[in-house]
Image 1: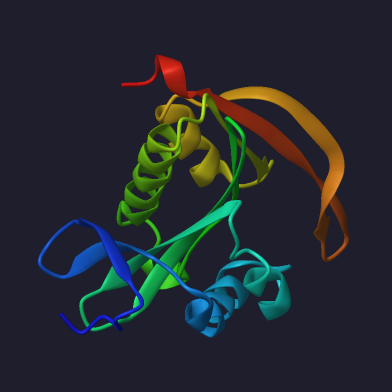
Image 2 (image 1 turned 45 degrees about the vertical axis):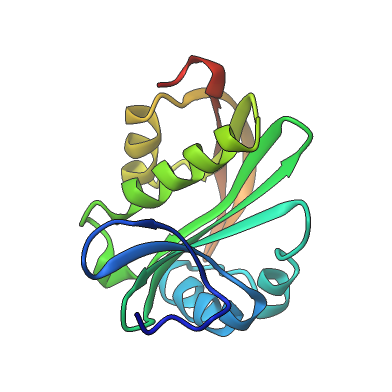
Length: 166
């Protein structure tokens, strides 16, 4: 494998794909993916702040070291929050979001979380469908939470009770 020594492989998905724990050395790749996938991306500094004892940053990586996507989870006591899940636009629609979300759910369960929470743009129908398929339920809304080029968009709050999932 061509992974830098710093990447701990969590799960091998195929001959060419693995879920790895990312490190601060991956922030520039994460920022590139974030900028290509979101209209209002997190900055490199914000992404760098997501490495610490309360966070798990997972990456979907090819064996050649190319990062295809990532997920950032914060856990405080028994509540986990999916802060960001992001894939290169050309990698979307291939089931990779499902793979990352499964790794996030498995990691939250292993860390003894009882709930996994997230928020998603109201217009992000593909993500909402993925979350609903995995058992997330809508628990609320934040009106005008996300910025748009010409205004604001609502955030949909969703929770997954981990004690009830297989």
